[in-house]
Length: 150
Image 1 (cartoon, rainbow, N blue to C red):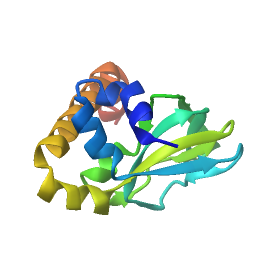
Image 2: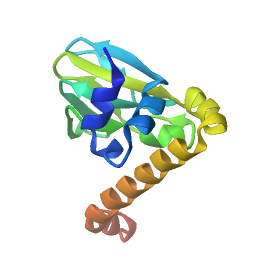
Image 3: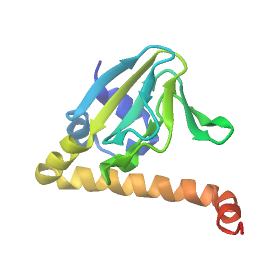
Image 4: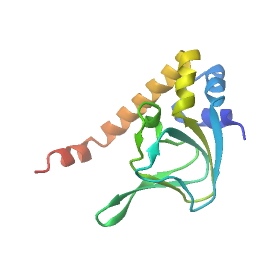
C-alpha cells in the first residue's frame, strides 16, 4: 500500500506539493488493524502519529464511570500528531471499529528527516499546530468550564 494517496487525501497534507508528499510518504509505515484491535492504548508510550487511509477508529478515555467515548475518525483523519513534537503517553485509546488501513510516522524517523528535509518537516509541524489551534478554539467553551470549576 502506497502512503502518498493517503497523505494527499488528508486535510493535514493538502498544502503539500507532490514532492513534499513523497518526502513524508518515504518515512510512513503501512499498518493494518482488524476490527476490534487497538492502534494504541491510553497511557502507552506516544512516539508516532497515524493517518487513517481506510476504515473507522473509535477514540475513548478512561474515567471514573468507565470508558468515555471521545469520537470517531475515518479516512483522511489523523491522530497522535503531537507525538512528533513531544514523546509522552497516549491520552486515549484508539480502537479499530472496522478493518483499518493506516500509515504510521514514527517520531524517530521524523527527527532524522528534520536534518535532511527541514522544510517539509517544518510545514507538517506548522499544519499540526494550526489544526490543533482550530480544535482548541472549537472546544474553548468546554475548556473554560473545566478551568473555571472550583
